Each structure stands twice: as C-alpha cells, then as structure tokens.
Length: 164
Image 1 (cartoon, rainbow, N blue to C red):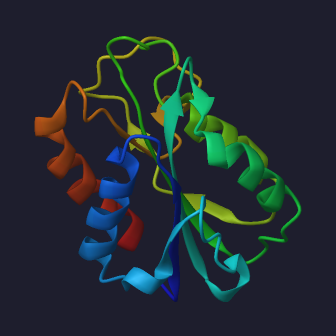
Image 2 (image 1 turned 120 degrees about the horizontal axis):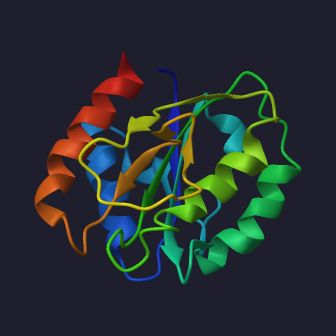
C-alpha cells in the first residue's frame, strides 16, 4: 500500500470519527491523519491518499473542502492511489447522498491517480445520487445518522477492498 495519509473535513465530528476508525484499521499513525481545516499536510509525501468529507446541504462539500479542492486541482497526483469516503444522510437527502464525494472524485479523476474503493449501492436506501458512477458509489458512503448499525461492517468491507 505504501505510505498512507488521510485527509478529511468534518463539520459535526462524524467524518473525523470515521477517519480515525479507518486509520486504526489500516495502522495509520495519528500524524498521518490530517484535518484539512488546520493541517492540510503535504500530499506529495504519500503514495496512498484517502480523502474524506461530510456532505452538507444538498450534496455540497464540507466547508473546508471548498478551499482544499483548489489545492487538489493544482497538485500532480500521477502515480498516487486514492480512495474516497463520505458521510451523509441517505434518508433526508437521498437524491444527493454523499454528493460531496462526487465533487472530490470529479476534481481528481483526470489527475493521473488511480482511484480505488468503489462500493456497491446494495443495502443503501438512496435516490439517484451523483455519488454513484457506473452503478457504484465512487467510495465508501456512510450514513451514521440513520444507519449507524451498518457503519462498522461497511468500513471493514471497504478497508479490505482497498488493501487487496
């Protein structure tokens, strides 16, 4: 997998919590987990990048991602492997569930990196969300508001998929 860094933006703490769980499962040091609000870290020191955001409003990026996305757009990601995760509300915002993840995906998909970790929509209660490409979420979609009981299994399954 190579040196791995997690970069997240969290408004309510849920995305931060999920980033910590993922870091623990992958054995990633706390110094390699970056809250983009206070510490964007140096993307180029990592071979494997994990980007996480919460979706706010109707599929909008978490506030700090709005600025951080400009950094990603100007960064050469060739040779990097990237995985995405997002936290949202699939019941109230089913048609835009985890839409923020799609915005990050769109910003990096042509940057020369390999994006891994797409997730089947099976078992999710969502509408026609932008976070789905070719029948799968572009990364791990978490609804800790309504489906908290499914979060541990979804994280475990996703972590296995990105490490194989």
